[in-house]
Image (cartoon, rainbow, N blue to C red; front, side):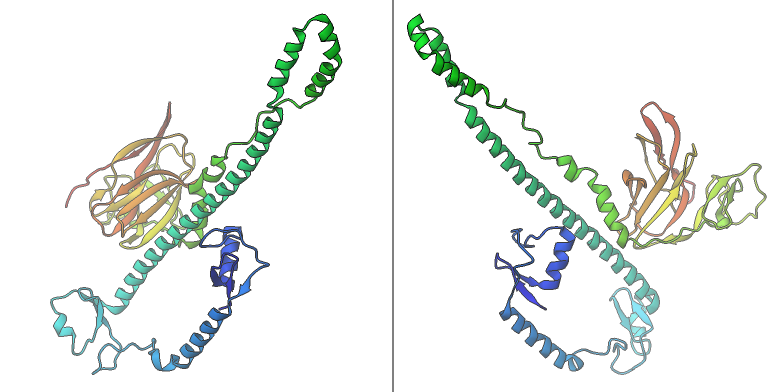
Length: 393
């Protein structure tokens, strides 16, 4: 719609071009990066005519060519909506005539399959959006650096011209020295001319050190991760993490809204539930994750000793001790079930703390374990990512 051509002869949709310029904060061609102007957009009538013809043809055949998406046909013999999904063949199956043919396959309810596939597709969409943000930020930084490089080049050219204006000063000094060596009479004859010339040269400004000639790389690349993180906030879906009181150790007390935990003395008398961990002072969350990408934050404040992490089956996930320059007040946890990774960040400025690779992909429960911040040491705060086997398989 509304195809326009720039001065560089590249053509784009007018509204799309406006959006691109608003995002990049410049008026460059998206293809060749040549500087353009919004005031000189020429309508590409050839493309407009083709676009109008295609839109009319598509609208005319829309009813005949597009099937009813609200009622997909799976079986030509039975018109009932499918209720089962075959994970082996990755398709819906008719529960009347095809179900028996899939007895050796893994067949799950269609609603469950749709939910899983949508979560997977959403995760992939977020990954693509993150990459797009990174690419746009990279292009913006490079464009800004090119512009600054051009400005610095012009400034240096001006300074070079000033230097060339003064480069004859050495020759003039030599000439004055030679006149000083002359005999009395020749010296007196040339004195007035030499004095006038010397004073004229003395009025030239002193050479100045060129300030700001170097490109400020820190301005363009400094804390790039934080700027990208700010943009990604708009596409990340946040889900509240609720603690499970039935899985809390007796020495831990949960808040009324089940979103915070603290140690209590003396130990509480609680029912001996099978899911309760009495060997470690931990509490699990009520919901686990088995697919997609998830992110949550844990506020630890100034507490000297705490644990945050994940657990799967009978194992704690972890494996390294690192040192931080400052004590984090809030921890960001990012879990990517599809890639099998969990990362920890200082939520204040998204400083990366550590990333763990989860070799056995599957379901994970949020737990107040694994990453701990202990006492202050001479060189930073010790953060320990421990690995501990609880027993079992």
